[in-house]
Length: 227
Length: 207
Image (cartoon, rainbow over all chains, first blue to last red):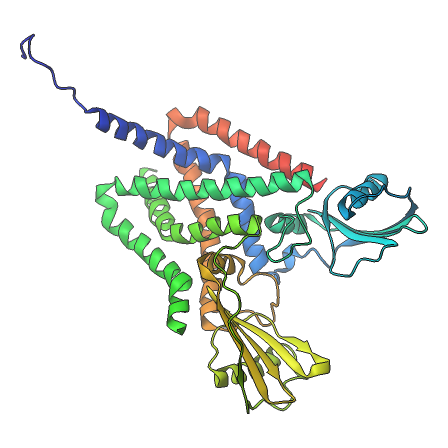
């Protein structure tokens, strides 16, 4: 029995307590993130396979697309830049989506652009002299929607003409960022949890090392070997 | 039942550890793809001209795999190794432009079939581009020529394996979570929040 005057050493130091708390929350974070992002993970893993196997017949979407076209009289769009004018034409036509500009040089009497969203795309050709817009609408099936979701960012590397201009594209892009961040945290938290399992260190290290060496060979090895 | 749980837990752990570097490559490259920004890409280097290059007689007329095989002979002659991205034909000038890549490095060969010359430029594209390149490959484009190097054939297999194993790890993760009775309520709330966010955004963006 310790005397009343003796200091009783706490069973765990403050740093040990903090480490325990971190361990608990690291574990919780690992599966909370996994559960929250479950459907995002399934979508991107599955559509990754679809993109790498475009010959899979069951997931075909382009041959079954539905194309329709129509022509409408429009009010002359207000003066402004291309995006402002395109937005006005889209409002009049009842179209919403991400605007994509082609590479063709601009004709002052015309406003030609594409509007895309997963599942639908519209080719708009507006004649600003006659104030007539011709629209070709293409609709694809659910497989196509899933595939487009994988790559729907509104921007492309090296393409300065097209900027993200639709709020929902921005929200989807932020979801992709959040998923990427979530996956990074899940990987790191998983490695931390494994390191705490002393009985599984050797086999775990072998699995991790195999992954790192294989992946590292593609990331660094191929480049170094060629020089 | 306990044995099944233990096996699932071990597979979740070891397979998860194996794919973790691949998942990091796919995840980190998302930031570059979503924001169309790739740091560390050097400008193309000075072009060097190689004279007296011998081309297969019908190289310009061939298509698809046949043309690729012909181009590969020429590239071997020039000492250029890597995955051929595409073959662009400039018919009027009897030229072929061919980008050849390994992750982090790109060589562009411009073959002048009439003059029998090849103009070659190289550039380092850096680590970020290497990750983006691997993320996109093999992909849905130029399917008839994609996988024209052994490394791309292996990467195709590994990219698929990562996706399949990731699906397994996610399903086994759900099973392992259901065994944690104290975490069911919080887990279900987060799962429900995730389902609502996912289907809410997908519905809004596609309708």
